[in-house]
Length: 386
Ligand SMILES: *Cc1c(COP(=O)(O)O)cnc(C)c1O
Image 1: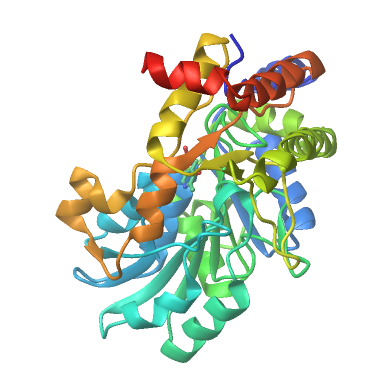
Image 2: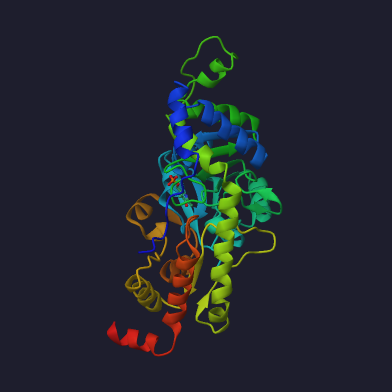
């Protein structure tokens, strides 16, 4: 069976994890957390980078930092993971869904302004598949309406928009290091900001609402409970795993982009024949090789395709069920525009296996299976058996 995803370990992972115990510091903010913080500040060129235990935790911190009142609205796509919306719902706010663009599958920036009301406080944009939203337009809207911009950059490690790292363009950025992401620590995440005030408060929120970080830097002589917060920091064991993976991030990134290009080149002819649509990377955006997807013309063909690959021992999953149609989405959220594209994409997208250790043989097998699906006869045979 070729899985959709496999976790990455490196030659150093075990060594670093064992070193955590040698350090006698296994809770948060130890040696490896500090190394990760330095790594991200340097590579993302940002002022504050804080490891957290998940992308969800980073989003929850952003939602607390946004100072939302019950009923305040946050504009976002419906085609995303539930945590994007749930983080704000936990603060009593109302996610307001806007449809996505059919090319990059990100929030349609031309539909944001119509969704703004007197209650709107923030825009949470999601860089789907690591491809940037149209940030210049989004930042301009936010500026004119005095809104915060939170980037759900969970899938956007090492991706840029007009040369700027994603996650550092808006007021706050949230990354995930879940096993399914490019860089992983099993579970894990990162909160980043370039805003001084948010940076200071983020440290407190992450540490149960205490000024513990200041205390350890010697900036206050005792530490105490000063604000709202929770426990969002990971153990240094998790940071050690993450750091071992960060050290080979160049290799991971070039491998993923190489696999992505192999898929793309192999299927370009299918796109020309109108059988599938391939991902679009606008010239202002980079491709971080997070995900390779195919878009089918209809749900029926996609269902047949997924079963066809499964018979060949290849697991190719579809992706999000739109949040506006999920039970909690119906209960807690609003929909600001027709969701035509969101619904269509949800029914027609398939993701192909993508992970660091995938072999050339496996890639060839997958490409071969995809092309076979479209070979005349085979496809017909299949439709009869369904
Ligand atoms: C993965 C992901 C999350 C959640 O990250 P976790 O680390 O699993 O909590 C949030 N938003 C998007 C878009 C994601 O892809």
